[in-house]
Length: 62
Image (cartoon, rainbow, N blue to C red; front, side):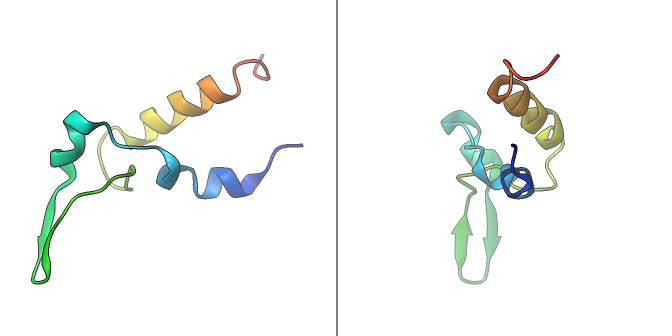
């Protein structure tokens, strides 16, 4: 049995690599921040998440 919960929160579970960490930086009036985990809205997020799922479920996918 597979869980839908992991798919729902999946984007927020994939870590951003150290070399790409600065590419997710944004500023607010409270300071400068960067994402540690993959946020929604970046160009390749969908493809990266799909690649992670393909690796995770490699033995289950036909």
